[in-house]
Amino acid sequence: MSDPTLLVLASLADGDKHGYAMMEDIQRFANIRLGPGTLYGAITRLELRGWIRPIKSQERRQPYCITGVGRRYLEEQLANLNLVVKTGLSRLKHA
Image 1 (tube, rainbow, N blue to C red):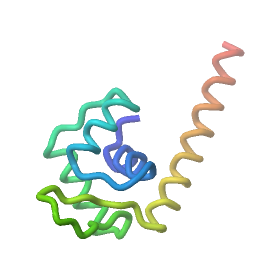
Image 2: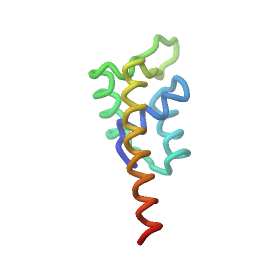
Image 3: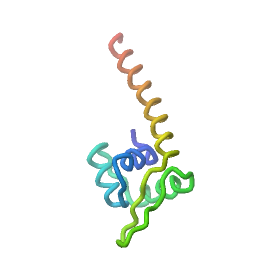
């Protein structure tokens, strides 16, 4: 899975983060390194869709959090991916 949208949402599902922290988290859990352009493009799209929102901060870095709508979208997408994984693994056993 390398969809930046799902990776960012999955990262924020674990708690609020700023961009660099998301990049590091995604590297750890997915072994994928998102470049700044890819990451911030995804953040912009997610914010426009209402799936994440910025949090007020006194720091220079802008933290974000996942919204309820974003959480539901992530749950739906992960359930679909889970079905694909289960089906693929089952079919591999019979191959």
